[in-house]
View (cartoon, rainbow, N blue to C red):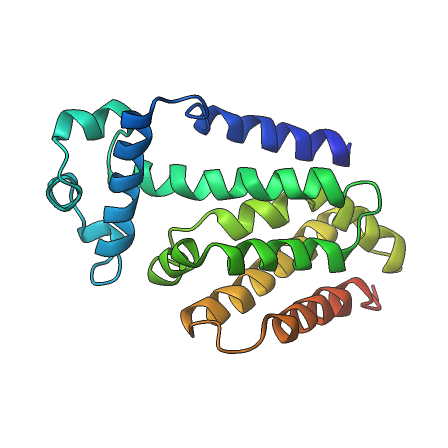
Amino acid sequence: MFLNTLNANCIRKEDFMKNSHLDRRTKYSLQVIRSALFELLETKELKNITVTDICRLADVNRGTFYKYYDDVFDLFHKIELSIVDKTCEVINQNYLEYFSVEKLISGSINILTENSDFTRMLAKNPVETLFLQEIISSFRPQLIETMLINIPNLTQEMSDLYFDFILGGTANILLEWIKNDMVIPAEQIKTLSIQFINSVLNTKFIN
């Protein structure tokens, strides 16, 4: 079930990755549009950025923008989902056969550190982001299964609440790290996040 769930998530992301065989002009247009969004996010919140702002900065016409994106939010989420897709590929290639919390967190943080423009975008728009929730949610069945095994008397309903706690807590740790320019070494953040998740998984539940 876990493998099927993650594969389904990754396949769904492929809907947003239809640009792998684009010509040079199209790739250029996509790049300058996305770069313009990153630059604008340095000084504006996402909700205050317009298509006109992006087109003016990217030096493209509105028709070019709307050829690929519905609006600014669609652009934001497609960039985000492309990073999710990349993370899914890393997980599929390296982590599924021997899943562990350590590998999940390590892989996610490595992706964040390798995509500095993207992480700055997350820092500017923490409420809007789907990235961290999508990655951690991909492992929901595995984490819930682990909780049901490790925490005595835990019900399915309570395991859902525990998972939401893990999801929110881990996402907040990583977002605070990003918002503070990732000044804390990545290895320390990995350790903190792993300790947090393991502390929940090792909870002694009492009726």
